[in-house]
Length: 290
Image 1 (cartoon, rainbow, N blue to C red):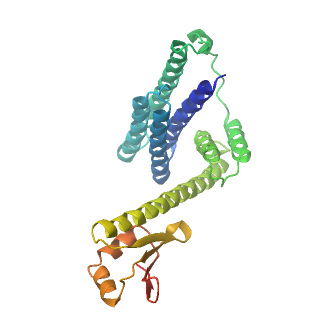
Image 2: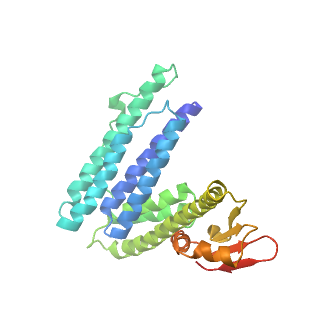
C-alpha cells in the first residue's frame, strides 16, 4: 500500500469520525453534551478542510459531512420543541447520510487512484455487501463499551484516545431504560461526559493561550505603528495569563492615561488575563489584576 493510499484511508476514517460525533449528539439526552459534540464536530471539520488543502488529490464530499452536522443540529431543535418522538427518525436519517457519504467517498478515492495509474484493486459493489449481523444485546453493548474505555487512558489528550470516549458513549446510548444494564450504563455515561467536558476545557485553554500570545504580538505592533514607540509586549505564566508591557516612558501619567477609559482592562478581562505588568525596564514597575 502506497503512502497516498494510507493517507486517504486515514482521512476517510477521520471524516467518518466526524459523522460519529453528529450521531452521538442526536442520541444524547444531555443538551450540554449535545453542544459539546457538535462543537468538536465543527472544529474537526475545519481541521479536515485544512488537511484536504494539503492533499488536493484526495477528495472527500465536505458538503455531505456539513449536511450531516446540520442534521444533528436540527435534531437538537426538534427535541427542544417536539420532545423525543422524532428522535429515532432523525437518527435513521443520520445513519443513511453517513452510509452514503462513506461509500461515495470510498469509491471516489478508489477510482481517483486508478485514474492516476496507481495500482489499486477496485472492489465491486457485490463485495461490499455483507449479511446483516444480529443486533447486540444490552449486555454485549455494555461489555463492548467497557473494552473501549479500558484500551486507552481516559485522560490522554491525543485525538485517538478521545475518539474512544465518543465511541463508547455512542454504544451506551443504545441501552434503554428498562434494560437491567441501564443503571450501570448511565453511570458510565456520566463519567464519560465529565471526561469529554475536561477534554473540551483543555482544548479551550490551549486555544485561548495561543490567542493571548497572538494578541501580545498585535498590541506590540500597534504601539510601533500607531504610537511610534519602542515597546515590547510579552505573555507568560500558565496558559499565557500574564501580560507584560515594557516601555521606557512608563510613568504615573502615562499609566493613568493608558488605563483611563477602562477599555484595555475590559479587553484583558475578556481574554482571560489574570495579571498585568508595566515596566520601564529599569526602575519603575506597575502590576495588578485586570
